[in-house]
Structure formats: structure tokens, C-alpha cells
Length: 194
Length: 194
Image 1 (tube, chains in turn purple, red):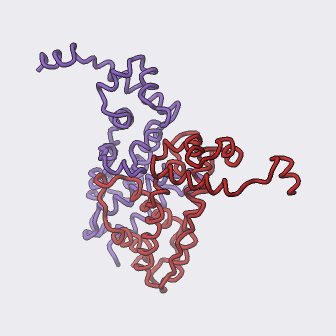
Image 2 (cartoon, rainbow over the protein chains, first blue to last red):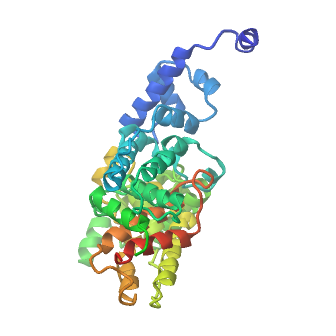
Image 3 (cartoon, helix red, strand yellow):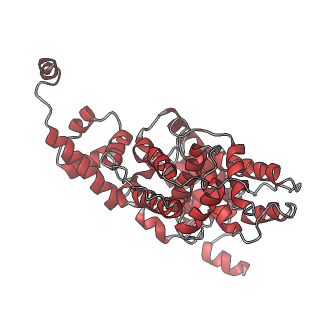
């Protein structure tokens, strides 16, 4: 296998180049913005040839994905069983992850606003999706607080939308209600009817 | 006043140029995408000099705003008093407005993902915000269906997030639950507690 790699590429792949390119991508994203984060600009900032980048990533968007979301480990919120408190910590961690300068700057690569984007299936939101963690938070709630018939994926989608809107919509246009108010509504939606 | 205008600009402003530029902006946005929608490209497509555009709009983003959102009259949903039905029609109209190809393509100009965006205060979301219409829908509901103590702006924000997530997140990554399921959750959040 190693032989084949050497034959194909002439020499073993230098993983320090990967790291330099990823770091440069993050730097350019934050300092110069998404539009400016082109492969030539990244190559220049990383001090590598653009061809070294093209050999490693199939597109600019894929590189931006890896740079911005590759290391974004979902922050683990360990449930306490106090659903209001746990949901608020959970939503805060989610918004915090989306609000990091790198993730914000890379957001256009994550979302799909152009017809052609619809065809690609970015895995990035899966990295930052905290759906399983959300289920853990709900599972820790005492009996009687959550209607067992409710579809938790529906509730998670509502929470995801609230987190995204908070990050995406400029302040001033939308009121910036404290997260606790969103949590209030989610608790009401989750509660069993009378 | 007219004299001053003539003195300043040399000749009266030709409003047909405005229309041609706006139409060209919409065309380029939809056909070529946001990144390609630059002032030189728009000028070329409209058959005008770029300087004519710079005289009329202070920036590319402002022009894209005007082109994409200027005519987007909020679709009026006349409430029937059946809250479930009215909320579903309302949410459907909202998502429909956000999903139009022009609005989708212009979305990066509307949302704020870069630090410097935070300083500008785009008015575009105000054009497509249907907050007053939402209040009308709620006001038409029969007594006892909506908890009078609930903050309707909080509920609207939740609905806005759900609509935005639906448009922004590529299908496949997120489940595409029918709008009716989001409406179910909103109704539960709105209902008076037991």
C-alpha cells in the first residue's frame, strides 16, 4: 500500500502541509471573510503551492468545511435532570459553537442558498448537530415533564432553527431575546397537555 | 429642488436605468449565483456603464437587497379564526417567500456571517418580516386557544427560525418534516397551561 502511494505521488504525503493549509484557511476566513478565502489566497498564506491544495481537497468548499468544522467537537452537556436548566445549557452551547468566528465566517459553505448547492450533501451540519445529545437531555428529565407522544426530532429542528436564526440574523433587525425565553417556549411545547 | 438635482447630476436621472439594473441583478443572481453578482457583471448584463450603478447604489450588497427584496410584498394571509389552519397557511407563505429563487440567491446579502456585516443594519428582513401579520393571525383565534400571557414576539422568532432553517439547510442533512408538524409544536407552545 505504501509502495502504491509512493508510486502514485512520487513521495509520501507530508501531513504537515495539511495542517498548515487548514490553519491558513481558518486564518484567512476570519481575517478576510468567506469571499476572499480562495485557494490561491490560502496557498499564499500557508506558503505552499496551490497544486498541493488541489491534490488534497476536491474543492474550496470542501477545504473550508474541513478547516471550520473538522475539529468542532460537539460540546458535551451532561444532563442534570433539571430540564429547564439542561435545555438552556444545551442551547447556549449550540449557539456558542455556531457563533465562533471561524464557524460564522464559514457559514456560507455550510448553508445552501444557490440551486446548485442543493445537490451536494455537506456533512458539516452533522458534525455540529447535537441531536443525540438533545435526546440525552430529554431522557434525563423526570417523568411527567415531557409528553411521551411528542416527536423529539421535531422539537430539535425547532431548536436548531432558533439557534441558526440567532447567529444568522443581524442584531437590530431581530429582537435578541434571552435564550431562556426560547427555552420557555420549548418547555411549553414539550409538556403533556393538561 | 429639481434645479439642484440637475445641477448636481448634469441631467435628470433616467429611471429606466434603475429598472434595467434591478432586473439584471435578479437575472445574474439566479443564473450565476451570489458570488458572481458583481457590479461589473451586472453593468454588463444591464448594458449600462458601471459608473451609472455606482451613482445609484452605495454598494453591491445594497443593490442586491433592493433587487431581491424591494418588491417582495408580504403575502397577506387573511385569518379565518381556525388557528391551526391559519398558522399553517402563514408558515407556508413565509417559507414560500424565502424559497423564491431570487431571495434564496440573495440570502448571503441578508444574513450576517462576517464580523463586518454586524455593523450594517439591513432593512431587508423587515420587508419580509411578517410580524404584524402573525399578530393578526393570533388575534383571530378563539378565546382559550392562546395563553394571553405568552410573548408573541418570542413565538414569532421561533417561527422565523423554523422558516429560515427550512430554506437554509440542505435537504438530506435535516429531516424535512411537513410544516404541519412545526405548527403542532407552535400550537402546543401557545396553548394555556392546563
